[in-house]
Structures are given as structure tokens and as C-alpha cells.
Image 1: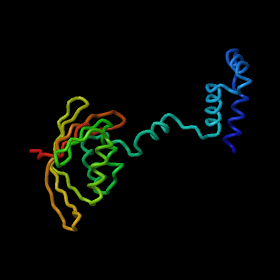
Image 2: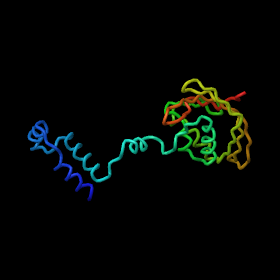
Image 3: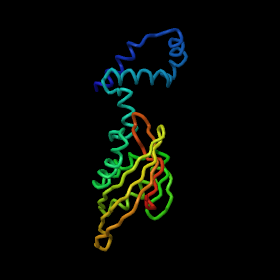
Image 4: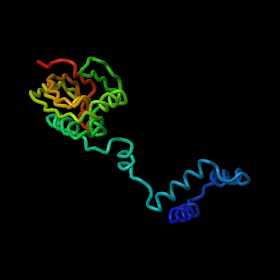
Length: 190
């Protein structure tokens, strides 16, 4: 109810110029124009306190996870989210147009395909330990390698211990942090 009251107050307090007066006169029979309605509605939302700041709006359209701005902490964040089974948090570490090659060697493009692949793996409640982390940086791009040990219980209830390596390319997106743009988990990183 407060929002409607704020919209009504915003409508009556908007300054009127000749163009708006003409616009209102021309559309009086049909009601408000779409543009004028949106201005009034937006002003009412803002006045009622329902409006979002630019930072809040941006935060709602991106990840709810803090960006990883220190390259040396990317694998810590990845490992922690993976071990917690946090699919959303894990996928937040990937660029929208990521190229992901899973341990089987299948190349997947984009976050949605990467997410679907991890969803099946995380259902097995795996635990990973990432070691031998190496980062080579050129401007806003990093080539990173690692070795990993993975433990999971397969569908038959047997504990599986796997080892492998990863070769990744990350890009520094400034305030959005370091994100994987290529993740190849299919080969050993020697």
C-alpha cells in the first residue's frame, strides 16, 4: 500500500514541461503513455524505498558470491565450494562463455553445460584436494596448472580415489575477480 501511495505522490510531484503536457493531452483519452507511466512508477518505487541502487541491481543480476580478486586464492575458493557441494558457488567462478573439458575429455561450452556436468559429479559428494598450484600471469590472463586427488563414493557404494591434473586459463575481470575462461580437467598438469 505504501508503494502505491508513493507512486501517486510521485505522479503529482513530477515537473511538467510542454512536451509532457502535450503528451498527456494527446493520450488523455487512452490514459498514460507507456514512457510516462514508467517514469511515474520508477519514481514511486524509489520514493517508497523499493528502488535499488546501481550496485544492488548489479549484484542481483550477477553472483551472490564475493569475487576472488587474488589469483592465489582461486583454487582455495574452487576447492571449498566443490567440497561443500555448492554448485552455484562453483559455477560463479566461471565466465559465461567458458570452455570446460571434463575429466572424460568432453568439451563443454558455456556455464549451463558446465553446470550440468558438475551437477552429476557433485551428487556423488566428492572431496577434492588441489595441490602443486602454479600460476603464470600475462596482464589480465593467467595460465594455471594443478594436480588433484579426488575421493568419491560411486553409485555402487564403493569409494573411488582418483588423481589427475588441471590446466586452466583465467581472466581478471577487475571488480568481478578472476574467472575461469578455459578449464581442462582431462589431462595431467605436469
